[in-house]
Image (tube, rainbow, N blue to C red; front, side, top):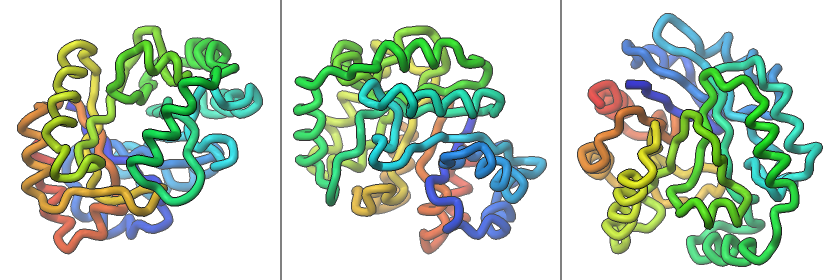
Length: 251
C-alpha cells in the first residue's frame, strides 16, 4: 500500500517533531508553486522513511487548482514540474471567492456548468505529454460527464485518486456521502482514495473529523488499497498526533 499525507502549509509544521513519529514508509506531498520550493522542503522533510513529492498549486486568482478554466499560460506551469516525482495534479474547478460554505461551493460549481472551460483540451494534452511515472491525478468522485463539463476530468489511463472526504457534509449527511463514494469506488475503481478531513485547509473553516473513531470508520468502510490523507499540519495540531500516526501506520 502507498500511504501519502499532504501538506498544504509546510511552513506550519515542526518537521523534526513529525519525523520522530514516523517509522514506516510514507510519502509527503508538499503544496508548492515553484520547483525551488519543492527542493527546499525535500531537504527538510526527507529521510529513510519519508519520500517527498510535489503538489503544484496556483495563485488564487489563477484558480488555485488546475482545470480547463485556467489560462494556457497557467497550465504551462506544469512543465516546470515534469522532472519531479511523485507529482500530484489536482483537477478541481477554480476556488470560489470569499468565505467557504457547502452551499456556496455547490452554487459555484452549478454556475460553472454553464460556462465553457475553454482550455480543457489543452490541459488534457498537457498532462498526457508529461512523464507518466509516479504521476497522480486527483479528481472528484463525480460522474465523468459532469467532470468533463467542469473541465476537471482526465480521460486517459493513469494513477487516479478520488477524494472521498466525508467530513464536508457533517454528521447528518455523512452516510449519503459515504454511499455515493462507495458507488463511485465500485464503478470507477480508482487507484487510490483520499480520506479526511483531519483538519481544515485553504478555506480555513471546512468540517473535520470530530474523533479518531470517525477516521477509523472511514478506513473500515472504504478499505483503501492506497490512501492519501489531509494533512500533516492538521494532524500535528491534534492533542495526540502520535495516535493519529499510529492509525495511519496500521492502514
